[in-house]
Length: 88
Image 1 (tube, rainbow, N blue to C red):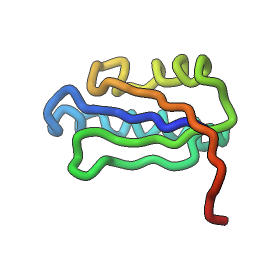
Image 2: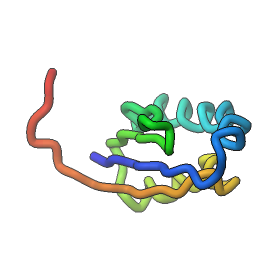
Image 3: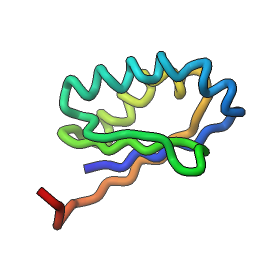
Image 4: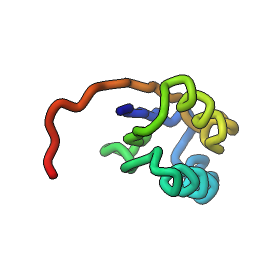
């Protein structure tokens, strides 16, 4: 499983201009059951995406499709972890 942490590199006004494109990108990978959960950080300095059913290498390629990546809206950090406990 992976935590993708995004940190915005531009003012929120610029983020909001690309938000709809970013949402379409997310929807594509929700449909493929790769993205499990996502949302903005509080305070709104970036976002978090939880991902599974993929490799880190494939996830790095997927991220390059994100309009936030393409338009240099955010930088990304991928953390892989092994869940040992979870709520049902």
